[in-house]
Length: 145
Image (cartoon, rainbow, N blue to C red; front, side, top):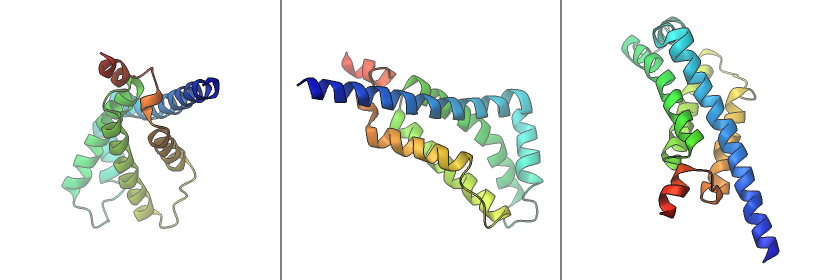
């Protein structure tokens, strides 16, 4: 019984730490892109200008460049507070697929070891550990009622 309690506490701590690191990474990236850089500059500099010669239509580049900063900001916030976690984790997973494709389109031998791989491991870790063990999430407290 004592080992089960210790394991449960360890899972809560591990899930909390991984979830918060992941949430901070996405929230702060989105925050910087929305409020410091601006979504417009993000779209123009990192999407339209960077991929103008690619097969991707300009309207799609512009849309992606505008949407992604807000997507990161919202998903990061949801991960931090622990609300709608499965959807938030799946959405940042899709975001990683999109950005990995974009980087690989520009540089076919794109090095995934940086930001992408770290975030991927954190997403998978929180999914495997299960946030249900994390008593610090909004979902836990809403479902407890």
